[in-house]
Image 1 (cartoon, one colour):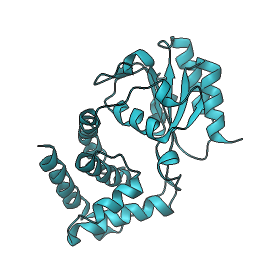
Image 2: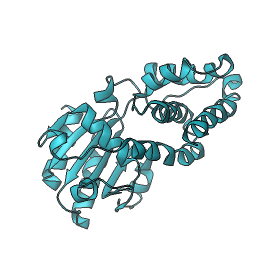
Image 3: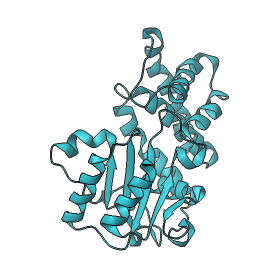
Image 4: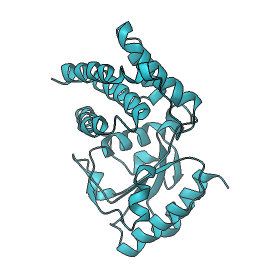
Length: 245
């Protein structure tokens, strides 16, 4: 069965949501071997614990060939829009170990929702419910930038064990702060490569190649190139800081 349809049917069965929307690479420029499947689910009211458990168990049991990232938000948290909004539930493959040990997602502030809502609106890909513009308010440019910047400390903390994704996501942050557009990881890397000094291009070029050609759980860095990652990251972060003031 199509994994996108499976996730959509699971959320409909558990939550009866206002809408389920695909976003991320699937709607920006197509799925790549290392792409996640990204879903934004909009509901009328917060979930009770039994529904949280049912949704989590269903997601953990999905035989999906790709990692799934699914965020649930109550409509009143984002319409009318305000920053930062609160997510009612978030599931991601990077949290699997916590979930399998008994942790259940709970509501928490999530600046990243500014980016998810913007991508869902731009992608206009409802899996159930009306078009996203009927459910979601547009996010002001300033909050898109604020959300991008808010994620930088977490990215830096993950650099050693998730190097490819951190390098690519920092390129996306740079792109968004500079242009206001949210690009796919590959398109953001292309934008950044055209603006990097030659000495800093090799790290991002390798991360882009890994993203386009390898599975999400495959990552190989030559020792000499990995040693250049911190310097590359410092340069990109300095560009982001310069642009954001």
